[in-house]
Image (cartoon, rainbow, N blue to C red; front, side, top):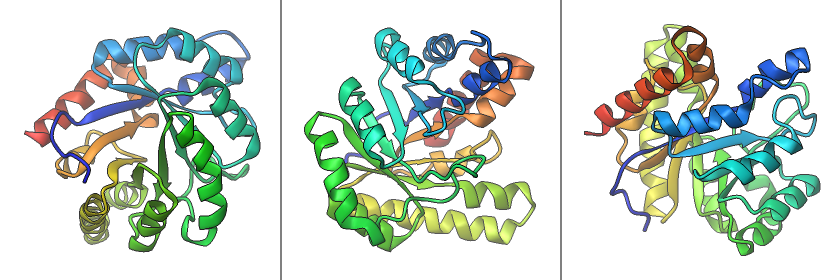
Length: 250
């Protein structure tokens, strides 16, 4: 059974620091510098998604992060042979398997585990054997959680995008229904012995109800924090998120 004691962890996704850098093809802003500042601000880990098309984080970024970080690196990746080879070469603390389509602006929806159990079980086995904590990014759906458990994942990260979108659009009944689903499925995943994480679209306005869920051990937040950093700076932006998370937990 996963332990629900201890501090709620914050993983800061630095992908969109690299997005801004790549827009000009320059060397700055540097995502590794952002990772170091995130630690100063109270982050517990760094998340980076190396996409097939390299639209933001690059191979060199992953190399430099592995060299420079004292925090754990959570390597988001699609379930492809190329990404598996990269993960096995670097052996980051954690890998999170996410769906990926070239045409999407960001990760849309959770991974379809139930339909691909056999393939994904074989895909994650060498990652687990290499010492990486394997997480599966999925919808808050019982069928997907059961499948993630069967294939041997240690962690499920529940997709909070529907909840956040409903809040942003003022659809409060839908928001509350999404929150209820997340609440129920966090408890269900925990009952199976899975560690529960959550993320996607979380903001200062939406983070506290998710942070208050006792089974959730880690939140991964990126785009909002990088956007907020434009106005208040990266360290204050992350520190405020940390404050809200801690307040919700206590």
